[in-house]
Image: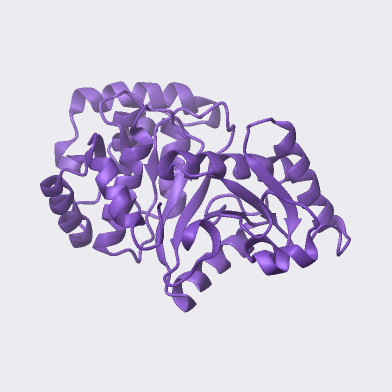
Amino acid sequence: MITNENLVAYLRSKAKENPRKIVFSELDDPRVAEAVKYIEKEKIAVPVVVTKDSIDPALRKQFAEFYFERRKIKGITIEDAEAVMSDPLFYGAMLCRNGLADGFVAGAKYTTSAVARSAIHCLDSDEQIGLICSCFIMILPHAQYGQQGIFVYADCGIIPYPTSEQLALIGIAAGKFIQKVMQVTPRVAFLSFSSKGSAEGRWVEKIKEAVNIAQQKNTGLLIDGELQADAAIVPEVAKIKVKQSDVAGQANVLIFPNLDAGNICYKITERLARARTIGPIILGMKQPCSDLSRGCNVEDIIDCTAVTVIRAHGNTGN
């Protein structure tokens, strides 16, 4: 059984079963350099290091032509496209799109917005999801809630104020993610300040609508809401607040109503509960990629890489 005590070992071991080519475009950061050495030594992945000096001129030209065709409607010129493809981040993303690598990990120096743009502009979108979003794996020591102390939080990094339709897709993407990476049954809770009608208002209705949309998509995932956080994760509270649910009291995927709530909660969980975090992990693209917090350490980079490798197994993009 996967628990908070063995998840990191599980992820690294699973990645080693089939190491994939993962792009790193920030080797000038000492944390990334150290992580890449470990990753290569332990055969967690096959690192593909991209620097300005290592960019192949012929490939850059090819990538720039593609990028120009994709983005010319936005007013960019071919010169603009060539400049973009001189950036190791975007060049690395194009390596993934063209099958020359299997995924990328970045964000130690690049901002989340830059990493997200490289994914949106260069990679192929996953039609089954239909939007780009993100999630974190949260590993809480000495906790039994969720998946034996493990949760997936979403969206904590991309969409500021999602619509009901977007929330539904975020929930589905996060549920599929935990299912693929950890091989566990997703129990997806859409969070609110209300539990099953205990409060009213447009914000509550928005969550209810998101749950209905997600359930109607027939993904096979266990989905419920609207639920307060305690009703979602604490069995004793769920028995009081929710009559019947396959999710309440045992949720392992928490969907936040907006980016304010998600980002604040993940940082509070990380600092006050001393949780180990893996992510942000970008969802919604066919080629897997992971963002990094600019405050990341070497272990964070290794863990994100292991997750990206596992997601590349089968190349589903989920």
